[in-house]
Length: 194
Image (tube, rainbow, N blue to C red; front, side, top):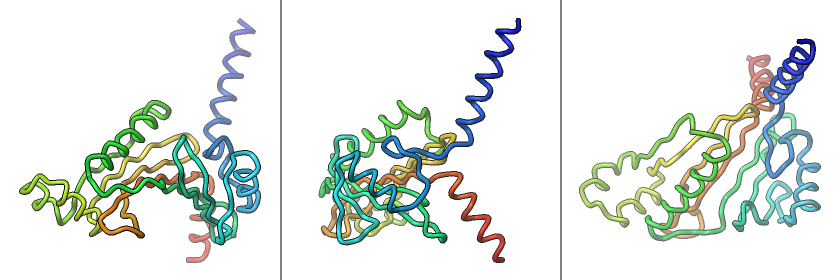
């Protein structure tokens, strides 16, 4: 009986500590200074720096990408954003890529807490034409709202289809890791100011 109680206490302690931890990106908690996190990605994960100290280039989940380290108001790491290098000028492969990312995250994190698939003001046009051209027009107009959000103990992960800012009528996959503890600190500072 004593062993069972100790085992239960240990499991409860592990569960409680998991709920209070930071969200992880590539094996590292999203916390601390941007410089420390950047150094980790460069030294341990093979990323390389760009002119912007908050943007790195490398490979994430076997995909070439750009990673942006987002600072909070205090200058510390707040969240991490990944933008795929793959740019799609056709809806079918873009949507397949989006679905593949959602599927792999579902395997790891379970069912998403929300999933939106809308073309906004272009919904009627897309429905009427049922064409990739109409769907890619919505991507270009930034009315394409395809977003899936996963909740973890450490925060949320959002996967979305976004406009490629460098190519006309091209879309990319965007993934944002938003740490819950960093968000609480940020909100607390804002509430203190108002």
